[in-house]
Image (cartoon, rainbow, N blue to C red; front, side, top):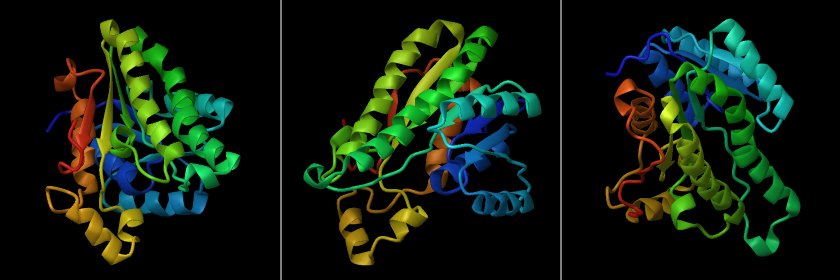
Length: 248
């Protein structure tokens, strides 16, 4: 298991699903982990739960669409824990409907959180990483950013865009010891996916060659590897984690 002791990690949208598993996995490997939240009650409840499991994860209230708020949050994390060495851009939403029926609001909301949010959190940490000569950035995209999906023009645009961001930023910072990669999960057994009616879920699973949903721990383990010392030569790549559902 790679050792991330004394590294400071920020995982956006880390209080549920894949994000929570990433926070815990990084903490297990010795990192000092912080995440942001929008719902105070839910976040504090989650923080208590993980503390009972032995993981002390710092939480900060900020909406990733708030540029100045993100800058303030990062200053606060750096004052509390130290400079951010690892950033996992995981915060994201869906607002699905066909383009024909999509309101401008549904388009803007998804773009703002999934893409602008990534910019707002990444820009304030990159310079510190390059100055110190070490950093890891992992962007959590989606299989649908690679293959497209009916009713998700807004979401798939952001997830394909995330990997474009990855490839360009990776080239800007590669010589400074900073890596930037994308992880694109397929259907993972999160609360959101498990809430889908069983017959629909069975149809989804039937399209996955592995014959099952992924689990959050598998995604978290891949993210932790990409944040490790051993992954120093891996940058600008997109890691598909979809059980063979889409091969590229």
